[in-house]
Image 1 (tube, rainbow, N blue to C red):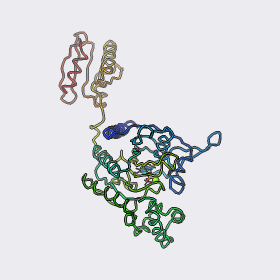
Image 2: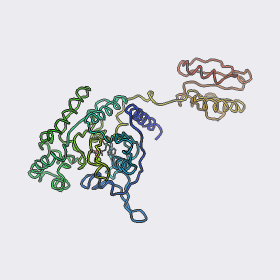
Image 3: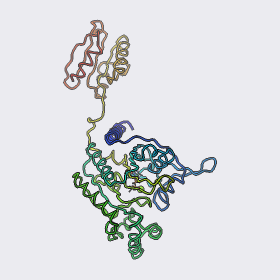
Image 4: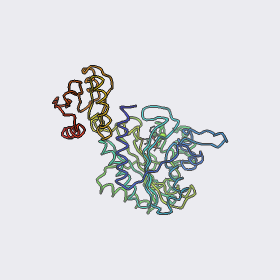
Length: 408
Ligand code: ATP
Ligand code: MG
């Protein structure tokens, strides 16, 4: 709604300028894709694919899905349009609605909004750190307090099987405490159990083994670099062994930004490396990493004051009498064309009533145009904060008002 939108625009604009600062290009992806794309990329045993997707057959019976997230579509576009051909290193961002059929509640909507970033073609863990730094920077630019990156490593195809075996043993012993979904997952895809939101499952896995302890030397070095570099950049973080993205294609670093200010839905952003996905979807074997910010949740914790971003009219024009309205209308159009923010109500109501409305709009100045003043070839400009009034001759009024506005 108007009133909320200004804050959202501020968040979006701040994100866009951050992306420009770090060399990201915008990509716009479709709202719908073939169901198969999400099923293959997000994974069959995830909350999203198991129970949250809006999927329906079209007239020909092809299954299509309203996008529940952006990564799959961006990877599809990267492959389909050979965006890697000129240069495999590409950095994209996109902002828009996502759809998941969840139980609506605070911080959880069926149509929600994400700000996404994806980086292709870079192996180095330094880019993962840069993504975390970007998130931290965005939150700082939006005066968000109390947000901490949580990080983990998921290892690689070499070292994960060993961890999976350990975890499977652990889960077997705990099976009586797990929800039915997790009992099934613990056989098919045990890592997903770590991501379950059911409180009793969370309790049951408190003592689960930590993947960080079983990383192979390469993955271990990679995760060390991430931790050391975060330290070097003075970014406080927590290692969280429970943090898995759950997807088979995710590898190595995963992260989430959590905050104490959101209640139960405490993750404002999540991301990580998914080196296997481009290849799995039919593209070249190129590494990738990225993040998704929940815009609805982020907007709730922005610490800016409304006055930091809400733009009120520079000039409210109060005109009294038909002749004045006609002249005022001309000026209003000229001001607007020059980028001076204007408002007027075209009403011919009393000065008192028009001043009241000017006050409501929080206009910085009011230009009072009366028939008597017009005859004298001058109008009154009132500064609403200082209450100072000056008489402005109407020849060259545009320039004169402009100068007054800049003066403040
Ligand atoms: P959650 O743990 O809240 O279920 P998730 O792991 O399903 O989140 P991701 O797929 O990682 O979420 O999406 C990234 C971000 O998008 C989340 O951190 C969150 O801020 C936001 N998000 C996810 N689902 C919703 C939703 N239904 N409504 C609002 N925001 C959401
Ligand atoms: Mg979810």
